[in-house]
Length: 192
Image (tube, rainbow, N blue to C red):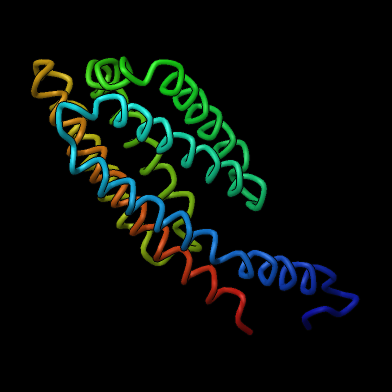
C-alpha cells in the first residue's frame, strides 16, 4: 500500500524519484558538454597545448561538478561520489594554475590517471548495478581503461602525449554517451 500509514516511505520515495527525474536534462547537458570537449581534444595540434591544458581542466571541473551533484542526490554512495568530486576538483585547479604544463604533467602521469578512472568506472558500475540495466558497459569500459593504464605506464613521453590526447578525447566521448543514456533512464524513472 503505497503512501499508507503502514508504509510512510512510499510517498517519499516516489516524490524523490519525481524530483530527480525532473533534472534529467542535466545529464543531457553534461553529455553534450562531454561530446563537445571530445571533439575539441581530438582535433589537437602543436599550437594548442595551452588550450588542451585548459580543456583538460574543464574536463576535470565538469566531472567534479557532476560528482558533487550526484552525491547530493544519491541515497547510497554519497561519500564515494564526494571523494571523487574532490579529487577531480583538485585536478582541475592544478590544470588551471599552469595550463601549459598540464599537458606534459598529465602525459607523465597518464598511466596513474587512467588507473584512477578505471577504478572509478568499475566501482560505479557495481554500485549502480541494481538501478542501471547497462551497468556492464561501465564495467567493460573500466576493465579496458585498467588495461590501458598498465600499457601506457611503460611508454615514452612522445607516445604518452599522443595517447593522452586520443584517450582524453575518447574518455570525454564515452562520458558524454553514458550521460545521454543516464538522462533518458532518469527521465523514465519519474514516469508512473
